[in-house]
Length: 370
Image (cartoon, rainbow, N blue to C red; front, side, top):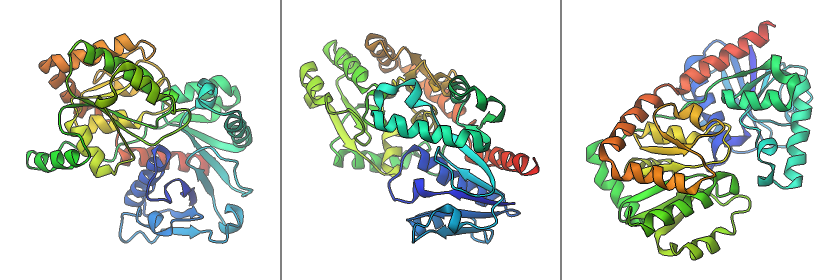
């Protein structure tokens, strides 16, 4: 087979969930598949794309750099399968189309989008669904959402869990803990902290976490800081006023984007990782935290409980009091916290990048054979 993969999502040095999925998929495919030919399509970031081909002798992988931006249809030749790692209006290629759908946020949580982005997303879905030979969903929850809003996709959909990069996210050895602590202190984090990781937008429910954190501080359940890691997104501007109103201005640290190395340190050293999102198609941070052995509190909606299993406390994200009580339980009960950490590491083992690649390759083969 000749398989083309759109790799623009990780063609910059800084990328988030979709880029992590696509880059990990390419890296793992290059490790397990020497039989098929791969063309990695991009309009930028040739070196970034090339660096993900981890097998040194992977001559069957090449980067198709569309430097004139003529489009995939004119850049790619004789392709059997075109894989879009996220929804897009597919190129006019005479080939079998596979699309990965990570979430249906624009349908399930439209208040988190502008009318323009909703229209754009709907145009993409309406365009690729009729043409797709297979639609890979990131979770059962996402597959259920896809079939609910687009019943015509039911017979061509499947789900393949994504993996966590254990080269980046793992429990720190004892000797590395002091240097990790020094890095955090350089970023202004000098004591115990609760961690949140995610784009700062309403869907992530940072407001509920801030209210829960204020509740914990007011009752002296926790004397440390709340550390927020993530880039600014849509409608996050009102949080400053809320923080002022709650009286926690000196206790919340916003760090923006951090490197994977730094993020690993934060997951490892956090007292608890809290991810109270209203909706996730696939909650990468949950698995990253698990892989580092963190105690986790997350939502009981969408894909979050599906990923969490029994390795995290799940809570109604609409109830900030419930979030606070759950976090407080983890903070105050050392045995319970350590039990969660043990379960987290075991749970993370079930989400492996190579297994994601093997199952995706199986989808390629099924589609190719018709």
